[in-house]
Image 1: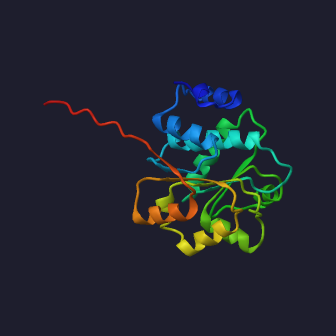
Image 2 (image 1 turned 60 degrees about the vertical axis):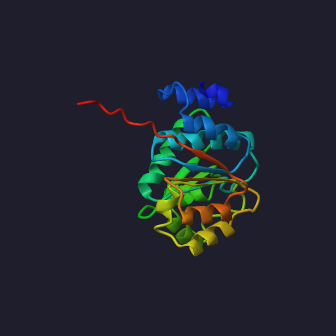
Image 3 (image 1 turned 90 degrees about the vertical axis):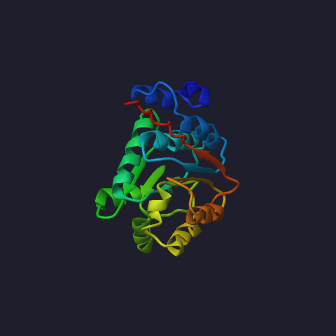
Length: 217
């Protein structure tokens, strides 16, 4: 199997090939076609570029396919930390190399005139920590009324830093009609509760860990 068999468009396949990817991982093979169909996803996977690409590539393709005439945020990516936000932004930059789409990451401890200017212009992908989003919402810098896709990454770690009430406040600012993608390291009662409140008939995808080879001694 290669990336073209997942129905990804040539600009994204070309960008993936240039990074050294020759074929998709199991997680990518399961998640990408379903995300492209517009389905909600509940994914379980460890940290890594393979997981990030599993939602980055199809999100970019959906944004490219549907290109409405407005200047609001189109895809909202919530993540647990600044380091994670930077890594996600780097992935979006890699796979959007040949696409006319924009992305920006904002997190605690960073906000300058350049960020504020970008938030007032057309922004296809906003990667942000929940705490920073709530902070900016208080000064009305972000309009989330046109969000088409919501991604929650590293959800269990994110929930260690934000209350259910605050997350509910963020979700309440999004349009009801949207696609939702959630990734976590493992299932828990809290993750299950959150998924049932946010996702609509989600497809569950899990990265299968390969067993270690034990050498006889």
